[in-house]
Amino acid sequence: MAGGGAAALAAALAFGQPAGAGELVTFPRDRIEIETDGGVRGFEVEVARTPAQRAQGLMFRDRLAADAGMLFLYPRDQAVSMWMKNTLLPLDMLFIAADGRIVAIVERAVPLSTAAISSGEAVRSVLELNGGASARLGLEPGDRVLHPAFE
Image (cartoon, rainbow, N blue to C red):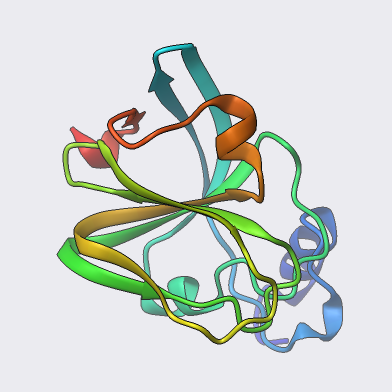
């Protein structure tokens, strides 16, 4: 591992990424909330802003805390396609407009699949949560994600 290897290894072990996954990209952490008809739900997320962070995403993780996720941020609105290659966990993908509104949800994306999962329209962000979290929490398109990236 290049510079910061010990810190990257510690972060990888804490978030379930195996040390054998190759060069590790580190992620800053932040808190987000999702405003729904049923109340406000909070999550601790890792934030993927750079191309390298977005390329790695949650690949190689074997677990993710129930209140954790990853927020992929893009510099402008764009159509986004994701895949599950090297992703070991089923995930829900929430596609988010620039104003923080959830425009689409793909539930329980299949681990290790190379099938493209598309936003269907231009979005600013994607939030990945544990598979089934959207249904369990009653998340729906139209709900709003609260984070400084959407202000």
